[in-house]
Length: 113
Length: 112
View 1 (cartoon, rainbow over the protein chains, first blue to last red):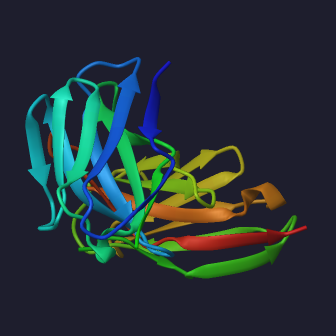
View 2 (cartoon, chains in turn green, blue):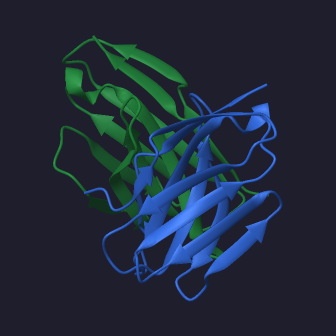
């Protein structure tokens, strides 16, 4: 069966510090991978998606970047965090036999102070 | 931009009652999905309805889709306290990247 991991679960970072959030998927190959951000009490905003290694599409201009160094690894990064980067970050995978559905990780709660 | 808009934003009911949540969207879709999110957790896929379907059932869940009105509804029958969560609709406009556009969600509280 497929599983998706995200870490860390929570993170408190000062403004101007770097960020690296990692997401890995097990039990499937060549998945589509997605990073979302969810502000408190709001819906999900798609930040990045990837349909293959090294292929990244950005949905909104922002202070963040994404990379996919391996087939089942998706990384969200920032060189210098802003207060507005605070939120709940969710990684998801889809594709293959589950091409319509997306399966979400447990999320990372990021607080920038 | 947000494609789906759920209505109401919040719903509070008693255990055993039915809960109905609605979703409206703006552009043509390939399919519409409903997800559930417990507080502070990731989303869980509940049910998918394709654009050529009008109604679908899964256990206590019933989803309808009216493409002429660009709207969908999720009915949870005989609700339980454990159904307390946020519910989101998501639309898929097609394409090989299978991007979903989520609404802002309905927060359902089921009181014991």
